[in-house]
Length: 284
Image (cartoon, rainbow, N blue to C red):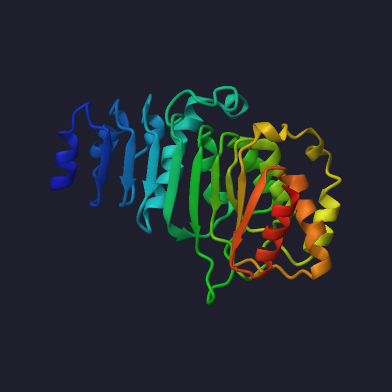
């Protein structure tokens, strides 16, 4: 027997534009939501029905622009919803059809629950090629350590798949500094996401100056768009440790500017960032 919530959803007409519901829904109700022609915002708090297969739906979520995953279980929707985009266009055509088909109007995706950020979690998100605002909340903690498990190759794939990103938060950067990603991941976002204005991603800062000196020779950086065509960039480092000496400040800023010529400010907790920001002002 369908719940009262599912029954209510089934009564929703084509004029519905936003939906926020906290109760589990039946398979019929979910399929009804997926077909609503004017639904642009969906705030998800429940788990998907076990028997639902949205990939079988033709034209699912045709106008969906904003998806907020609110509860601990709601990220389970991602593979299901992402399957609609994958089914419509084969992998080899996905970038050619970047803004057409089911779910391809999706510009904002936020996962409010803390999750391990790895390629398995991010893979369905990469199917939404029109994303502009992406916010993930990582599950890194003092007790559990770092749960950010992407690699530089993973971030290259993400940046390539999501070139329209202006706001990319891939989990709050923790203090552990044990991640596999390096400053090479920053290069991937700089070269593929030309409109990026805010970026937060784990990258190892243990040998920051040496890493920046090395990456400055990366040929990918030789063809960046002119500074006048790039938005001011804010690089969020949160709790990342920045262990550099006074003589490293200038070269480190120069290295970051090589990657992000429009870098405006470092945002984070380490006191060394104040010195880096002061040097950035001098470079303007």
